[in-house]
Image (cartoon, rainbow, N blue to C red):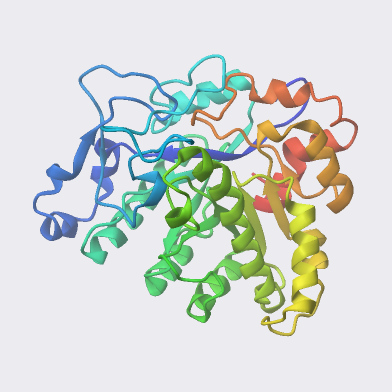
Length: 385
């Protein structure tokens, strides 16, 4: 709590170290990957930028998907091509002090950081090793990560919440993970990873939506820097990539999910976007509504796009750089029940340890709107903690 306000941070990140994750791996993983030790890479620097010293913890690095601006050599705008030996550099840390170095994978350290910043509850987006040549290995790492999260969140079950990480390549396994963990106190939503060129509205995903609705979870889209959509056409430039990929990824996901009638078929299902910007929501809502009528190519919908977006089942985390005027504008145009506070802890975009204080000082966000942004809307989205 901060200055009398309860705070629910709706976008933070957790990634288990290899040492923490290994005890949760099924014995079959060692049989599938006898050389598992070779997939461990030392954590020399935290995601926020802290330089670590030996002995290092490690992360599993199983491979990757695609390429594009997130993995290609970076090109600076105005240059014809990337410079020789050009490498991606860590983003600028936007806070005043780096988070605790192991807060990304040690619950007690995270909780101390939460106490310092005045955060009551965090929703954590998990990082899961994926991309092995054998799909069975990816499935086992997903299962192991959920077992890890179960114990991690048990450290403080009313304060630590997380998403189930699912994969559209494994529908039956994803449904089983929802059924296994959906009733736990920590699992409040799902984050579905989609293969390249696999639409979110694909009919094969119906069992996933049905399971989500049955368990009362939220479907979450979280954009990411290195991936699609658009990663093959961003001209090898991280500025263009990071600026465009996060909003566009959410724009496409929202249009696909809402326009496909999924909210009609599952009247209780909720959908939220994280770390994708939010000032574009009124524009995109109006444009989607127009294009449904003008272009078509969507099923018969029971409601207007505007009704889906403002009817209490769609939510979006704020990003701090868009500021108070944008929060006020979106809330005035679409309703004060939609936006949720978030900090991106422990990534460099966080203003740690001053993220909450920054929002508390926003004069344009006052009265009844402030507690809704800080707490109420996240509770409506993810449930009472």
